[in-house]
Length: 382
Ligand code: IPM
Ligand code: MN
Image 1: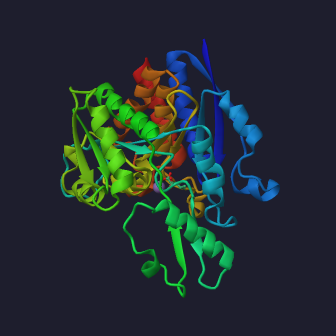
Image 2 (image 1 turned 180 degrees about the vertical axis):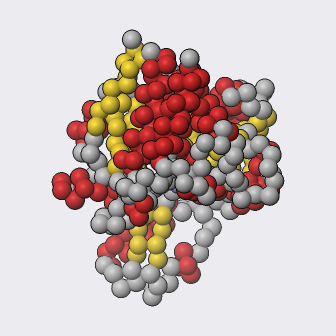
Image 3 (image 1 turned 60 degrees about the vertical axis):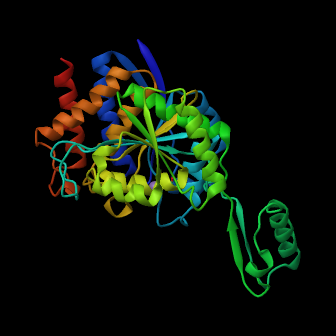
């Protein structure tokens, strides 16, 4: 019997409730296909941080490197300043484990309402680059009345960095004004593997087209390289069409014409923003699963929503995003059929009309939703 070691991190707020339902469903799928999931529990989240001062200790990270995957609920709690757990836990996992893909399928399931007028099928495979762009935290705030030494140093670095740029720095950075800068980085190596993943995904899912999103018209260096690599990689996939979108236009077409998209690949920050839009046009965050994927390493699976502290313990949250994220996890660890069964069970359970969670305007509990999907898995697996 195949056995998989999974790190389980329920986290904060409604995290424990949704992970419980996810585990229920994944166990049902494991029973159908005859493999074992060994859950290794970690208490990370606000309580743990407040007790120990650490969001994610390196020793735990090293343990997780030896596992098959990580199943994560949500982080965020009013007792901890915003950003602390986001950076210290979520981004730390993504960065330390080199999870360069953030896969966010946006699919409209039966009986799920979209705020769009149209009702055609929507299935967009969003691939968000997960490590670069503006997510590295590099930058500085320079105060007009701050440390003169810092002002001089930052200015020197800027002059050096912009040696070849025609930009009137003196006019821009008046001595009596505060200023701030943030540094985005795009590398060829990482962009290339992201693009390759996107084209391979299109092939694997039987899709016809990959769309690369950017703002190369106003941020020409970073997204110029992004486009260049996209074109290079596209040459290896003559069977898949490819096109570019500017992010602002992409936003608009997600609403106007979502069925025109197959696989869409985004730089990190734009991907963060547009995938929330992708979620809402396919029923909301309650249905939006995410996989932080390192195809050669350890991947982490989570719903893309947060910890919703005000709903904690009420058993009213929609666990489907977490269940679907679990399905992506099974696929990633090599149990493809079991992963597909989870997705099919969600789809058929929704089609049956038995699930109408609070976000869908109904009263089906979080725990009932997990029971229904797990029962559907056992029924389909017979
Ligand atoms: C997401 C979240 C995170 C992100 C935050 C919590 C760091 O918004 O997963 O989309 O910006 O990536
Ligand atoms: Mn986000």
